[in-house]
Image (cartoon, rainbow, N blue to C red; front, top):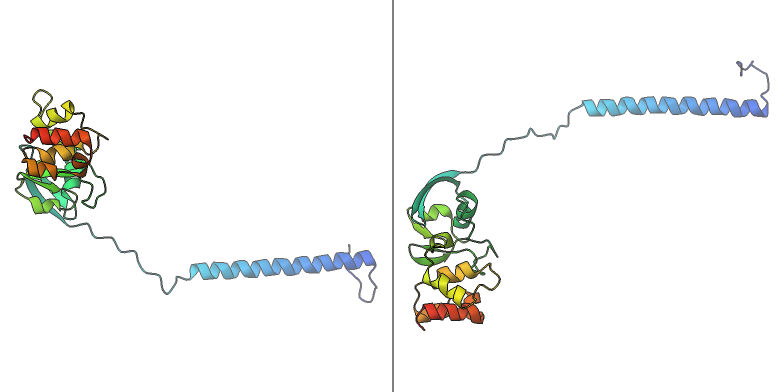
Length: 200
């Protein structure tokens, strides 16, 4: 449609075409203005933007202790539990992580001959200690008496806690054996194994 001569009336079709062109021109102008404004806002850095600060490395400390008769020297995050040091760093995976709150007993180890829950103590607290895990309790060629008793009395139950029962009860007196881990005192197989080994 050619340019409209001044004073010349538009037909209905012409008026529609003219309106479309006006609307299209307004829309294009609006898009250009909006795009320019968006570019301008993006280009201006925020006054509240903070530079990214590098996170500090966790504090570490050298620690040495004996596990199953062998000395181990480690450099550990000071927050590492004895349980994680044994499992994740030294690969003594016979020590299990159960509740992680010191209640289930799956993490039981012997430290200097005393039964403890390894999930509750930090590795650095045991520098110089002698730790015994189930891997050091006996061998296939020479089972510990408690291991033999668990086999004889079918005391393995779920297969997750027996190691704690064995470590907690090995060499214990009859009274100590009766107060051993929950599985050993609650179920017939572990209880019989524990008491037979304790001389009951």
